[in-house]
Length: 190
Image 1 (tube, rainbow, N blue to C red):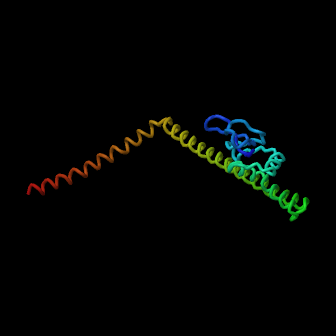
Image 2: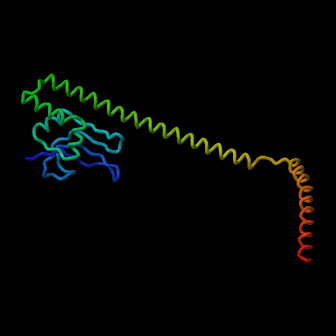
Image 3: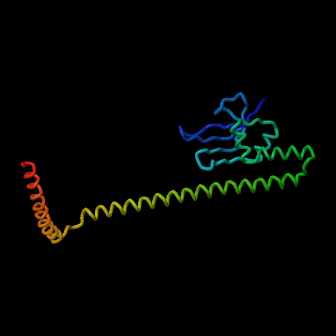
């Protein structure tokens, strides 16, 4: 019987959630399976993967073929690297201690990369939130200034002073314009 390590879909439309299972290759996608190895949630950033590492290594060593997505998940968690190291131990290229040391260093670097990504996402989210709050505060200040300008009482004294200062100026301009028009009219008449 050919076995496959594949994903079994759960969740609602647009929000998938998967179980990582070992199933007969002839079984339907969401049908009967042999063993459940873990879960995969692509809705989070970074994706949440829970996997029973020892069971997954056992199934891969026994010949279960992962699908493309399941292969990516197993590689991400280090199952395929562990299989590679186990092959080196069987061939005599490595000792168990060397393989364990290599795998431990790989796990540390992988954990560092994941932590760096989560920190980067958190800082960008915090910066976006700060920028949004600053933009909102500026908008509120502008709105408050516009309302204050609109509702500010206009002093009647200032309006009266402006009106009295403008009236003589308007009369003076009218007086200077009138003689110029009369001289133009006289020039045309001649």
